[in-house]
Image (cartoon, rainbow, N blue to C red; front, side, top):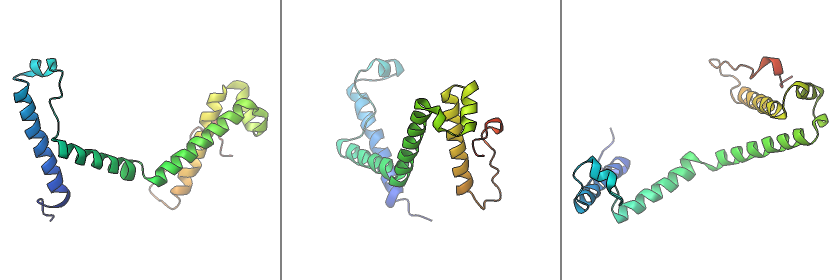
Amino acid sequence: MRNPTTGWPALVDYIATDVIKETQVQLGQFNITDLSTVRSCVEKTCCYAEPIEQIVLDMKRFLRSRLYRPPRLVAMSDRTRMTSETVSEQIRKDPKVKPPRFQQILKSEKPEILIAYYIAGVTYRSLKKCTKGWRSLVVLSPNPSYDVNS
């Protein structure tokens, strides 16, 4: 079992204790006694002490860059965005460039629908590729009537 007085548990405890103490100071300073005075107060009532605020900002930056937006995920996201923008642009400019099945869909649907089905098909193929060998996963076609995978 981890020691709660060291590492992340200690840091979280320190930050939580600080926000409680600072908020109590703010409540006293602005003479806040009930919910109506909290609502009417224009100043910040719940806050960290100055040094702790910097620690929290640094933690948020770290989590955003390393956990929520790691470089690999950002690169994949950018590549996907560029691909979908390029496909969308090509379909809008000249639908005849696309295979006959796409041209057929465009006779009865708006270009946005074709683009959505195309992206769904790409996503479907990527998911199938990523999950190859997984026995418990069932992958369904995005829309059997517009099978962009064939």
